[in-house]
Length: 151
Image (cartoon, rainbow, N blue to C red; front, side, top):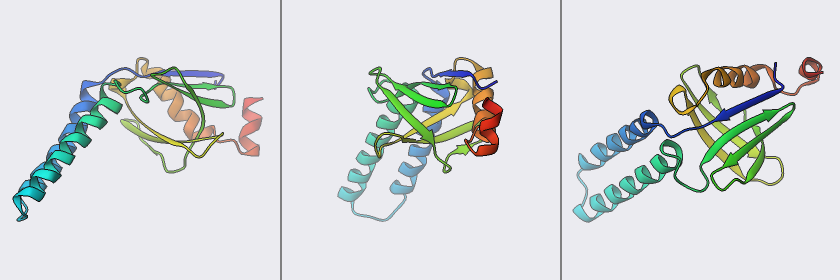
């Protein structure tokens, strides 16, 4: 059942809109505060840059470090980014996983890097793979009891 799962990520307009809506709400809050104009403009500029960065990282997958593939093969979890670099990782317990959206936090097995990936049904090519991935995250943790399931 868990022999191989390939989650290919694709650009998502829906995810871009969600990220932009969060940044626009922050912009409205900044604009409604009674602060000096120069500080307000600086905060609005930072908010716009943060929106642009995260839309390119998660929504449109244009940045070089955007994750484009999550592969689970037997007991190994690897991430592939836009530069075709492999990132061997484990999924963190801090990840948020629901049937609608997943905020995945990966930590590297070789160094101390972390990577965050946003998943929803709109940015995955195969919906059955995202379902299988969610099942793997729930039951695929490598405890001595669960290792017997893979053998």
